[in-house]
Picture 1 (tube, protein in one colour):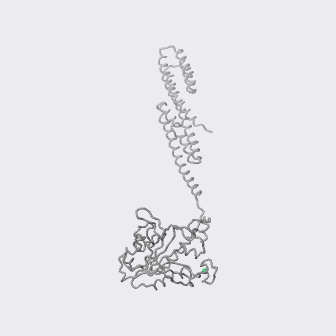
Picture 2: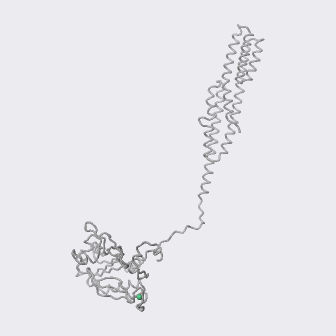
Length: 438
Ligand SMILES: [Zn+2]
């Protein structure tokens, strides 16, 4: 492997030629002096100088100087001085040529190494080696100023040209390597669009939400609007505005979660009806699905449960509208064959109040051992009634002009019946093995 320090060595030798030219000057002075001195004494001095020059490794010059010194014994000393000067010049020219040759060899080999660099990191290492502050080329440039004046432009030019050539070579190789590395990265990152996809786990609707959707879809189809309200309610909207004043025993019927500052977790979605009526004039046709809360926990009660309420207020609304609407809803959810019946009941905010049962959609009333209706043939479905005039008055509607009906149902209970689940608590325990069945 070629050692670039060679070039530096030649440069150093060229620098020493400065000493050689100095020697030539000394020789000239010695020759001058020799005019007045014994020539043999001068010859001895010249011989010693030549001897010294041998150690400077400018042997060619030394030889010439020796010959000149030899000749000086017989010749005019000034002629010798001239010869010594020429010899020094020749010596310096020879070395300059060597420097140029070395420089071009160095440049060629360095360029080859640069072209062979395998990556940008290796290229940077070569740049530091060839062009860095402690590189041979930098050292050569520093040595230029120690050269004889006439040698400086050429050697300096050679060094600068070498620098420029190497910088160019590095730039070209850097672009090539950047391209190669970019290509390799693109190949590595390539996406095979023909590979099969990763299956995405698909969820399913909660059984309660299926029933909620079916019921809400049905009412939206009739032209009802979906209304929603806060789950944390004021006492006023949850009780008082619904004809349940403070101290009314119905308040204890609904085991309520009381919060600070007269707030409660709503025990039903009825506050949404009040909020709706307070915010608009009749006619009102809304359906209100949402979560509600009561302090209950057994196989058919959970502290959180879903409710869907509906409200229709308009001129001329009667109980037959209520029955027809709910019968159609029951057929939509449980099938075309189900029958409905109304039983008298009591709620604080409707008068009259009814409960609506649907015929058992599993056995149709024919199986005394039916697990869904337990042989009764009927399933309790929901509570409903005509809106109490006191409630209409409370929200500023004229009960002489408007009437309405309201209903409320439990989609969780409906889902239990529909899917044959005995324990409501399973719905809300978050066990995916259970929920994935739906
Ligand atoms: Zn049945």
